Length: 161
Image 1 (spheres, rainbow, N blue to C red):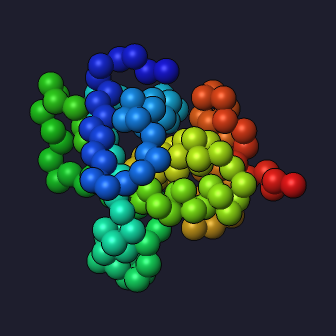
Image 2: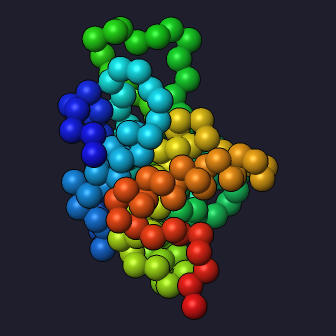
């Protein structure tokens, strides 16, 4: 795990949400994912755990999809590089707690494992990975599996019996 204070994670959890992992656990998953990303220097990530209403609003506003979703990634785009003594904000993640909980039940995964997958998935999106075609999906899934395995989580793409 990245013990380097150069990687900063800012976690916000909306009020009224239940069964959300501790911020230290969410931070650990962000850091495990950042360890696999080839970024020079200090980086930071903002992670917000939101309710379904906020997820739906964000998804509608930024992706034209009128539904709550598990994770939304908002990579930062800079016209000018930040000062060298400040961390680079990789971007913001919005993870919908109720959707993640529902998906974990439906997919017969532990909530902890599914949270780890969603955080990892979101960080990889911030780093520019995508799954819009088969080749991109294969690269992204390979990275996800590698990161999750380092944290003790099984392959999330293996069908459960």
